[in-house]
Length: 165
Image (cartoon, rainbow, N blue to C red; front, side, top):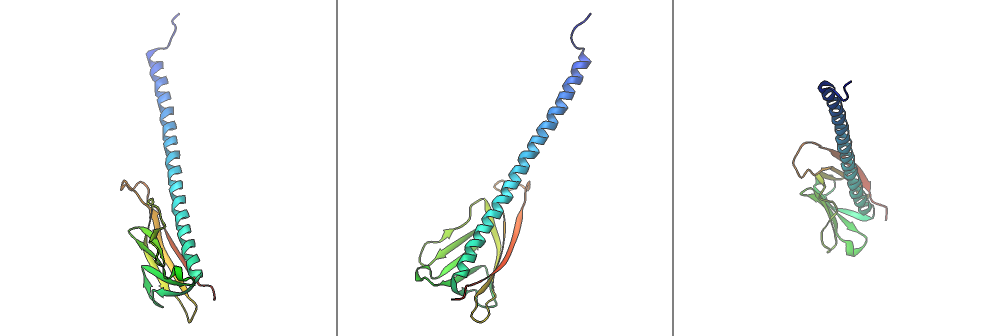
């Protein structure tokens, strides 16, 4: 009686194991890509919310809007604050980053290099003495490899009114 496997049996077993391993590796790669994609989406949303909160806080605490003028739009905005050390406070979006400058202080970038911000549109909706500003911009993922494997962008749009003094 012969012991062992025939060549055909070995080839069949190797093929079955290869198919199983291919499926397993494909599944693992897809799980890792989905995780990276979800982390990127989370980073974009978290950073954009932080920027919006920072802008909203400044607008709510401002006395009035210096620019853009009433019923006009611009790619930046400038606020008159109650504190003279913060006058003026300005926000701008340039080269994919959001920056703030408070008073005579240095300009501070509020964003990371991983997320880009563009298409800024700040519209002064102020009526009478009530400063109101509409904030619009797009945030997206910076792709250092310039590949189109994963493209994601979110448009943000809100209006904020200053607190009555």
